[in-house]
Length: 294
Image (cartoon, rainbow, N blue to C red):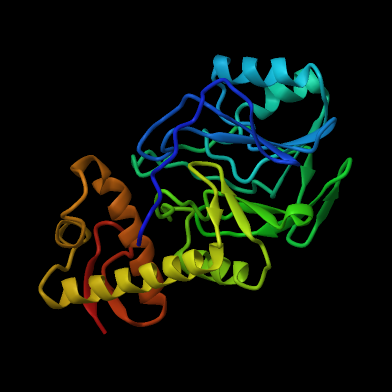
């Protein structure tokens, strides 16, 4: 994979991205958020907010200052990681706009240092489903359910500009984390395939730069995941039967502080592969399992 890390946000500044899209990047850089969370503002005078972001005072203040001159009709959330949804509540209090997201359902949050944690307090006012359409002032947003990174992950399509807001499902700077217990590799791959049926010309991830000509990139992400599974099979064949051994063998080129995220991704792959009868797990299908080829 070739990733684009050329992105230098102006924190606290609203940037015009296109006629219908503006962006504000929160100052919350990390190994999982890149340079920070990008909050998107859709429309001109009566707008929607996509991924209001973390509850960082500087970010919320910048949004509130900008929103003094526009009306907010919708607050949309791609998923409820703590870098995406916590600012929804203070924005709702200030603007009166209601929140929209997929059903949060039963949530399990595990501190595995593999990704940003879950915002357990976020509950949307309106539950969205795949295929829903949200109408605003001069814009519409298509709702696409894209489970994998999280089971409640959504993307939003803006047909007026053939744009897709991909949250953490597709990012140009890095592969997405598909982390246990809620991430699902089978769902993630199916959700990537789902995007290939669309005619979007530009992706706007919540982290990093836009992705132009996105279909080749999506195909490369799918191929990357299949290559990773071949690497896992090769590692097992060479005697790496535990997840720590596989991470050491496969991810020798990444910093050790990212190994928990790599281990979570490997487990997601192994669950997918076990369900397809490509690997066998001795004991519980978990981080502690011992794996062999079928």
